[in-house]
Amino acid sequence: MLSVRSIHSNHYSIPATTHPPTLFNHPKTLKRTFPTPNPNPKPHTIRSVLQWNRKPQLAGDTPRVVVITSGKGGVGKTTTTANVGLSLARLGFSVVAIDADVGLRNLDLLLGLENRVNYTVVEVLNGDCRLDQALVRDKRWSNFELLCISKPRSKLPIGFGGKALVWLVDALKSRQEGCPDFIIIDCPAGIDAGFITAITPANEAILVTTPDITSLRDADRVTGLLECDGIRDIKMMVNRVRTDMIKGEDMMSVLDVQEMLGLALLGVIPEDSEVIRSTNRGYPLVLNKPPTLAGLAFEQAAWRLVEQDSMKAVMVEEEPKKRGFFSFFGG
Image (cartoon, rainbow, N blue to C red; front, side):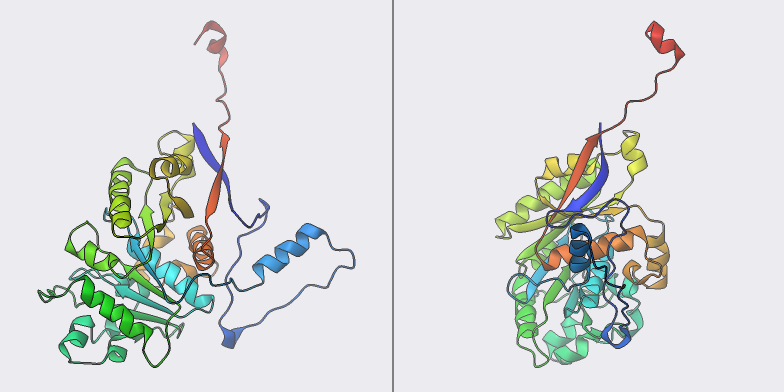
């Protein structure tokens, strides 16, 4: 049985005793202290400082339209959208997050913006408001905005589909405030009309899955549908990973998941009880102080997304179990 022992990026290598990098503070509250320079610095120390004290370089043309999907419900799509979106905003990029789950939206709850959503895309299409009125700007990070497709328990017009969402993305590109760097679409569960509508304007996809058979079967099916729609840049995030269960051979390892799906790995999110607390408070994990393991994993995934990077899980063979006294007798 294989298990995850250490994970590193394709381009970056971090010692096992080094904590993952945290994101930059807001420009208004930026306070940075630098250590006293060493006259004879070690080469590996210099590389580490240069890597984690720089802003990631945005790869690709803007805006980058990324859909976050899975097929199966309850694997963490909305949690991923909220945390990756805010991590991108904290890195200094402008982000518009679109909740494309019609009638069952939850992204506003995770962001703590449920009381500020007055207009939705439906009102924009009907001519009842302007697009900038439907955009909800986060007070914590002004370069992050939320846009909801519809209000809870409401139905979309019959004519609403992929073309309407493409028009919406084009309107965001040409708005007076400037084109956002990232447009992130929170895709609804399933592979019905809502799924087709959400993936239509996207050119990248993040496939969220968990290390269980049912989630992997749905993820494999969704991968084929994304490729049929022309989306080739597909990366996966493995959520709710428990190393204790992997060691006990009760859960598939990240390598097993990657071999089954055959996708590039964007991030591995460990199981964290703080997720439920942050959801109930409307305060995403990446804003917690001190940061949690899951929050740091989301931050690293956002960094890789900016540079169109991927990560690699280094697998080692599990230590053999201790043999008891009766093993000498074949027991």
